[in-house]
Image (cartoon, rainbow, N blue to C red; front, side, top):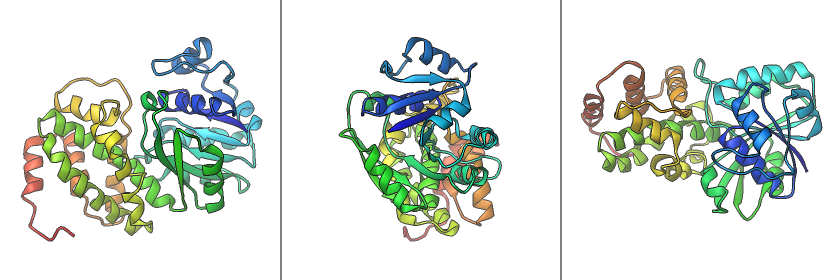
Length: 319
C-alpha cells in the first residue's frame, strides 16, 4: 500500500517508520522550512529514531496527496484548519485521511475530524487513529493496543485490518465524538497529573483517574457520543502513557509548570483545556477538574487553594 505521512514530528516520524517497516511504500511530507523536515530528509534521523532508507520525502503537498490513497496526518492539532484549507486548494479528491492527533480547536472546540470533513469534497473519507503508545516504546517493538474510529464503520474496520502488525493490535469504532473528545481530554488529565507530581501530590492521581473520566463522559453524552468510548483506549486506556510515563509531554509540562520551569515541547492539553471549557459552556456540563486546571493555567489561580476547593465541593454519591 502507498501511504503518505503528513508531519515530521515525533509521532509523524514514528508512523512513517512503522509503515515502512511493515512493508508499505511511504512518502513523508513536510514544509520546506521546517527544521524537523530538514533533519529527517537530510539525515534520516531524529532524536527518537533512525528512518528506514526506503522512505521518501517531499515538500510538495500536491505530490504528497496524489501519490497515495491513504493520507496519514500527524501535526499540531491547532494547525489542522490551515492544513486542510491548503489541501482543499489542491482539489485532490477521493482520498482516505487518517488523523493521528489528539486535540480540539481551542477557539470553538471543534473536533479535528469536523475540521477535515468540512473542507474535503464528498469523495474523501476521514478516520481518527488514537490510543496509548510512545515512539520510544514502539521502536523497541514493545506492543500496544490502539483504536481507529470513523462514522463509516467499514472504513475503520478495513484500516484496522490493513494497519495491524505484531506491534499494534487495533480495535475499530464508529463513535467519532467519544473517541476524539476522549483522546483530546486525556492530555488535559495528563497536565493535571504532572502538576500533582510537581506539587508532591502524586497520591491524588488515583482520584484523578476515577473522577476525570466521569466529567469527560458527561460531556460526551451531552454531545451525542457513546460514554463507553471514554472508558476505552482513546481515554482511560491511554492514562498510563499520559499520567505516569516520563515520555509524556503533557505530564512533563504539568510538572514543569508546577515547579515554575520552562518546557520546550508541545503539550496539546494546554490548548485542549481552553477548547473543553468552550464545550462545557456550550453543552452546560459541569467539569470541575478541567475548570480548576483552566483557572490555574489561564487565570493565575493559586494551585494549592484550587485543589483544596475541589475537595470542599458538596458531598454527593460517587455515581
